Image (cartoon, rainbow, N blue to C red; front, top):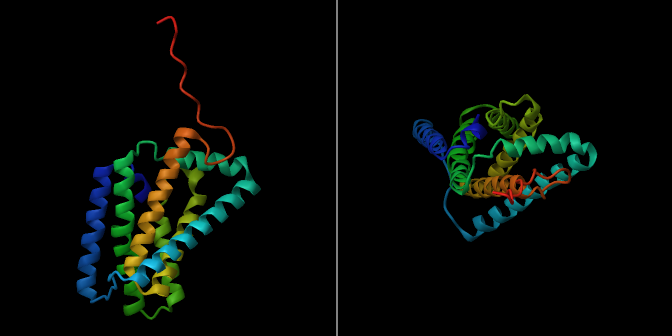
Length: 211
């Protein structure tokens, strides 16, 4: 659902507003505690967290490409095509919504709420919040259903990062930059077709010389 919305800058701003408003209200009602203070340590943690998340993305992506080849490549091509209406504005707004709205909601409200207000152990709270995060990123095309598992893994990783650092700001920075890079890679693949082996997108036909 969230991925579909992010094809439109206006719809994404609406999603961001909804997530931030809901999270802020829940924070006040449940008296949740967030650490969003920037410090040199937080900057280092954000850099390290982003490196780990991108490394794991690359590991999964490369492993699936080498083992499943065209079966995976074709689905990745479909996934990239789902965001074909994104321009630079949509990509920037989508990254902002991920880093700000989604982190306030999933880590700041849902995960922190479970940690503070429920008897669940931390590992189960991370799993629950990560599962909901992944499910809400499901795309309508049934061929892309396996990517929900990847989205759940991302949600779990962000949850682990939140618990490890104790900082919502670190998760906001890492998630926002992660999605900015990801959507930019989709755009590059759609335009040049060099992100993955396989067939590149068809080139535009040359102009008719007789016209």
